Length: 232
Image (cartoon, helix red, strand yellow):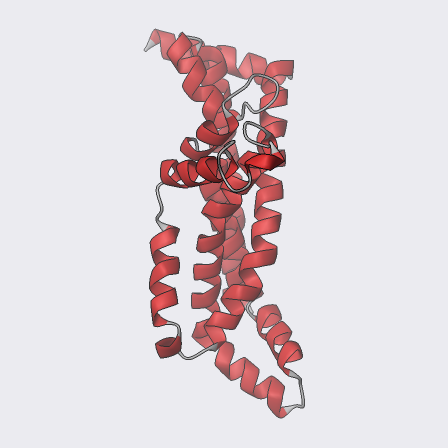
C-alpha cells in the first residue's frame, strides 16, 4: 500500500509541476479523441436521425448491425483498421499507419456506431411527432430533419459524450494502429500500460488520475445535460 500512496503523491507532484512528458501525452490524447469525436458526430448524427425517422421494420437488419458494432472489441477495430492502412491494404499508399491520423480513424470507427445507435434510439422516441408537426407547418424534408435534430439535442449530446467516453479510455485499437511511439503516438491509455510494465508507477498513476478526472467531467456533463432535458 505504501508504494501506491507514494505513487499517488508523486503523481500529484507531476501534475502540479506540469511535467512536460505528462502534458504532451495528455494534450495528444485530447487532440486525437477530440478530432475523432467531431468527425464521428458529423457522420453519425445525420445518419442516426434519418434511420430514427424511418419505420423500425424497414431498418431492422441495419439496426442489428449497428447495435453489434456498438459493442465491438477495440482490438478487433484496431485489427481491421491496421489491415486497411497497412502497406498491403487498400489505403496503404497513404502511409499513415503509426501516426495520429491512423489513431483518429480507429477512434472514429469505434465511436460512430455508438453515436449512430444512440441518436437513432433518441430520435425514434419522439422524432416522428416532431417531424409531423414541422411538415404540417410547411417545412421541407431537410428542414424537418434539422428541426428533429434540434429538438432532440439533449439525447444527441448524451450520445456524443458517451462516444467520447468510450474512445478516450480505449487502449487496444490505438496501440495497434498507433504503435505507442514516444512523442508521436503515445496517449494516456497506452502510456499507462507501458509505464506499468516498466515499473514507473508515478507517471502511470498520474495519467490514471487525469483519465479518471476526465471521465468524471464527461459523466458530470452527461448528468447535467440529461437533467436539463428533463427540465425542458
